[in-house]
Image (cartoon, rainbow, N blue to C red; front, side, top):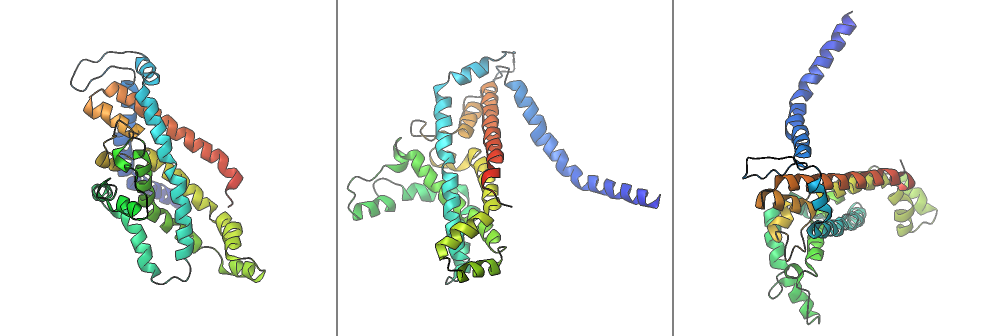
Length: 294
């Protein structure tokens, strides 16, 4: 009897601790999600109090909207930055996990961009990518490239420039997570491989990389979801321009909701974004059995 009362009190204490968080999730995630699903079937405009049911008209409009397909294409291009950032972070982590001069300072410097204000990052990279006086194009001219890219100022290279910024931004976070995983690898295992004649790159490829595959899987899932929801940096740098060349789905939602006040259509795009995230996550969970080694 005393044991049952003690377990009941422990359960009540647990519910008491998670209660505020669950209330926040309910009020700020679950209820808005249900309401946005309702709005998807309406013509609700923020400035117009009258709301009418329009069925699947917003869904039909979505599949006929060329800007939606352009935003989807830009989102896919943006997502390509995630595996590149993860690969570079793994290489940097392997180097900084060894005997490197001032490696603690280097780790801090690599991680610094991740904790820097997005607006500050936007301002700095806009200066770096400035076509005429920017240091990046200045360097390219100095090495003999007479006509360097316009970067953020042209539709052909703007999305590439955004990818470069995002790779740089995420590199430090991915590196720190990899460093934590590398320090869990048995030094005896690595030493045995070296005694058997394995070269450094063979140890990295055949031992270290498979052992950190759960970390890679984690970074891939969280990185793709974080990237697909990214809004602030692109809004601060290009606002989706030039010519909608950097408009991704999250920015497309914002434009329809808070620039055109078309809440019904914005809700439809939001659910399309959710469907894309769900599909990507399911594909990763299905594919991880082939390459993740626990």
